Structure formats: structure tokens, C-alpha cells
Length: 555
Image 1: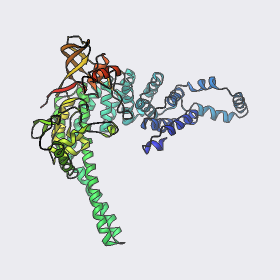
Image 2 (image 1 turned 90 degrees about the vertical axis):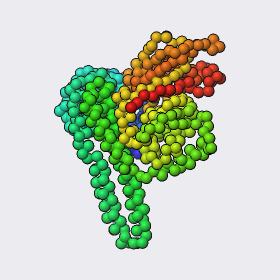
Image 3 (image 1 turned 180 degrees about the horizontal axis):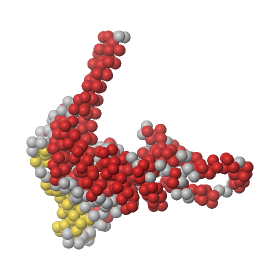
Image 4 (image 1 turned 120 degrees about the vertical axis):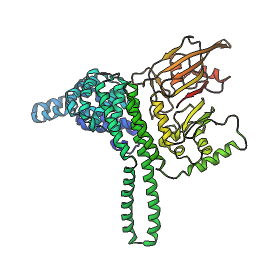
């Protein structure tokens, strides 16, 4: 199971056989193997094996032996066990030790963290297990390393299990080890405490102070590390090339040139990805501090300065932009001599950022999880075509310059950046609530005419089911805010409808559609969130999901 997960090979039948076999042999497994390899493997591949995880939870909480005794029907096995127990006391001790291996009191800090993470990654709830995990974790809290600490509280917040005593213990440990946390670990830690409603000034203060110190260090080193890495890699390649030249100088010269070009391209792309990750880490932590309302203006200003410098470094990294040539040809063929009524167009064109109108039937850009979904023409290709030569518009690691999305069947204004600096600036505005987005929506039924707000958490689908609907009101959901104002109400063939102005304070997947469906008022012609008869009735007179983003406010 571990090997398949490492190779990212997912076979449901093989996984089920492995899970069934493992569930029968849990008493033979050490906690480190059980939590760090077996549970991790199934969680990492998204394999849904609830019986295995229930067996793991039972074993950890000392339920497994009782369940097994009640289910056994083979008296010969029982008698044989009694014989063994009475005749070989030394073996009896070994058997008892093995059967108790998975008692949670034998778990190390890393075992506790790994098991909690695996359950959370698959969305499995086990209140008794997580109570036991919390109790054991508090007794070995000093043994947790930063990654295990962040994974532990991430798991609890992901599942909506808010154990105040556990978070208090972690909060006492964080300041002692803050310098050892990686940026991703700091981000996960801040997210977990924010979602859990534990806005501990000590924890967030330590995170903010550490962020400021690291930003100051990054301001001095941005770009230098990638150049040093290139020099080292290229020098190693040259040494290997010289060895090969002894065999066939002429052929190897050509091959070495090609290899160096490929290596340079790979290194440059890696540098671009590393810079994007560096920027994302800063923005994530700033976002979590802002959500907890513990972000200082000094930290925000420092983050803007660091992101601007990272943006300048990104402009000089990566391969030359050849992709835009094909996109330009595609856009030219698409538009022809005139502009079709259903084609995108620029609403606002500024030196480093722009706003484009997305018609229904167009897809902003398709990520890896959406490759299997039916989609429309790509807005990213259109923008590359009318704005050729802009590096960020061809960079998937920066969302091709787009700051947000709209569903394929929806329409409206899309904000895009022309430079990396603008992208980071706008993304920071988005994460700190400075960008306003307003929509006009037609929904089913009469909503109360008073202004209202929906705060129900939205749980987007995982990468294993990207086309599934988002769930509302689940404990593991993400905080979401949708503000609603009724503009008009009308009836059609005896059926009620409300025209709404909607603002969102967060941007969860399908947030407006999911929230309105949660209220019992799905948007008109919503194939995913409305009942099938309702959708078919709407489809007869409205060909698309009635949702349009008509207003954007940004700096």
C-alpha cells in the first residue's frame, strides 16, 4: 500500500484487498508502521476504506479485542489459544504484548500526528479516537516536532473537532519551537487555530514575529539562491559531459548542448516554482493572520514589499514565452475579422492588470483536477492571444494571472494580472478582504426582502471527486460569508423567483450556488444543486445558470 501511494498508483480493487487483509492483522503491526505507512498510504491515495479505519480506531481505543471475541466462531482456535497460553507462558507474554501494540498509550508523538492526519485527509469522524488522541498528545507534547504539531491541529480543525485543552497545550509549545517551523507548517498552524476559533495572541504573535523576521531575511536573499543553484547544477552537468566526451567527442558535444539546454529549462522552471511557493507561503500566513483579526499594518506593508521583490525575480525566471504565439493564432482564428457577440473582451486595460468579461460557456482555466470535466473554450488562451509575450499568462503556478474564477455556465468580470508583481499585490488584496465582488442572481422562490447573511461553512470536494457539489454546514467546512439583498420578486407560470444582489466575503468553490441551495432557493438552471425536475423546468426557458458577476472593486 505504501509503495503504491508513493508511486501515485490508485487501483480500487487492489486497495480493497490490501485493506481487508490489513484489518485482519492489525494486532501484528507496530504503531509506527500502522500510522506512518498503512493509514498514510490509504489517505494519500484517497482510497475510501471505512472498515479498515474503523478497525484502526477500535484497536487504538482498546475495542478491537472485545469485538474480535464476540465475533469469533471457531472454538478450535479458542481452545488452541488456551493451550498455547497455558503451556507457553513466555510466548503468552509476547502475544499479549503484540495485541496491545496498538493501544494508544504506546503511540509516539509522530504516530499520533500521522494517524490524526490520515483520518482527517479522508474525512473520517471518530470522536472516541480523537478524544484519546488528544489525551495522549497532551502527555507527550514536548516530544512533538513542528511538523507533527501543525499536522495534529490541522487534522482537528479539518474535521471540526475543537478540543480546547489540546489547542491550549499546543499553544504553549509553539513559542518554544517557533524558529523550527517551516513556512508551510506556520501556515497550517495559523489556519488551524483560526478555524478552531482559538485566536491565541501568544500563538499568532509568535507566528507574526517569525514571519516578519523571515521576510526581512528573504528581502536580502530573493533571487540569489536560485542563481547559485543554477551554477551548481550546470557545473555538475559539465563535469559529466567531459567524461562522456572521451568516448565520442562529436556526438557528445551535440548531446551535451541539448542536455544543457534541457537542464537550464528545467532549472529555470524549478526556480519559477520555488519563487511562486515562497510568495504563496507569505500570502497564506498573512491571510490567516487577517482572518483572525491579528494582522498588523507593519506586517502587511512588509509582506507587500517582499512580494514585490519576488515578483520582479519571477519576471526574470523561467523559459522564454513561446506559448503565446500559438495562443495568438488561436485567438485570431476565434475572432476572425469581427468580434462575436459571445466572445470575451477587455473591460479595463491598465499597464499591469486588467478586467476581462467572461461570457457563459467559457472556462477561466482548467487545472489538473478538472481535466476530466466537460468545459468550454479557455479564457486563458484568449488572454494569451490578445496580450502576447506576457510571461505570467503562460504560468500555471500563478493561475495564468487570474485572481479568481467563474463557473463555465456563469458570466461576468474576471480580474487578471499582467505581471507577477501585480498578481501578488491583487492576491494580497483578495486575501485581506480589500477586493469587493458583487453578483446578480435569479433564484427559485421568494426570499425575505430584508438583507440577510449566510455564514454556513462550505466544504469543497476533494481532488478525488472534483465534479461533486460543495457541502454546506459540515464541521470540516471552511468559513464562508455570503451577503444577500432582494432586488425584485416575480412569478412565472405560477412559480416564484427572486432577483438578488449578492456579495461574498470569501471565495469558496460554488459558494453562492451552494449557500442558496442550502437555504432552499437554488439559482435558476443549476444542474448541480437543484433537483432534477426543477433543473429541467428551468432549462426550458433559461439556457444557463443565472449568475453574473457585474461589479469588481480593487486597487
